[in-house]
Length: 333
Image (cartoon, rainbow, N blue to C red; front, side, top):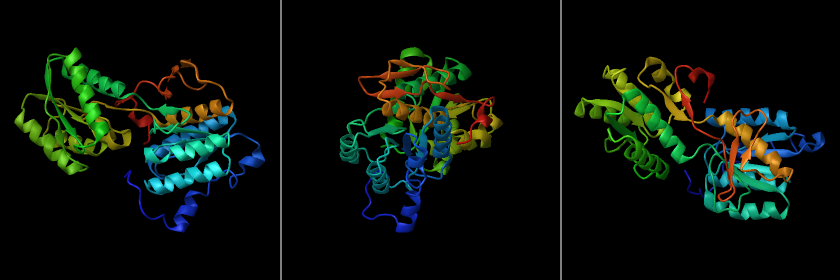
């Protein structure tokens, strides 16, 4: 997904993606500062939720919010959209990065024009971006998942792991951090060697079934990739292990809603993209107003303090969100 393509999207589709430019939307006439967010692609529930959060923040903070991105996850087209926004003089532009290596020249152009270019949801740490609005730390995600699972399995249990692609750096990072959490805090927990399903839910179903057969004492199954979440949930249901084996993973509510309600998944861990979109627009307004981020920030409309690490330039949304039967229907992504 991160490899540059050799051709642009067809002009009609590309033109549609650019249609929400600040000039077209009347931002200049409204005489409001403009904050843009460029997702990795448009038309999916996750980024729709970020858009909704951004629109809410725009009303709260008196800015014009621009949401525009490629029609598929194409880094060339995303970069061209960012370039277009820079050329039009949008004061603050945030991007969920597809190709981190390509952003630095555009950041330099934005700085030369007095504009603020920053990242949200996905980072380009070596680009010179103004700030990175991050969802949650890898450690926070891993620790939360293990802690919540042990609450349900007990402190002496065997737990299986079904991941996605074996070469995926973020998935492997979460696995290693979960292993570290278990080693440090739960000596009675045995994490089995991870199984890799690639991007196939069917393969995840088979691997989860095999783990339950090979380990009759298994008490938990962790789906590390979103693509493996349905397969793990289905395997627990098919095996008649609801209540005996607790499923969980890094899964969006829409992906595992039915499994949480059936009981095959005890919970899921991720974050709230609407809150991330809200924080992104607030950060853009702060940058426009040249207000530095404090170590701890009180953001109107957000309950928890927002922590800023000046060393890394990361503005952290906060602790991960745990989705359960009690709250899963409050989210749509």
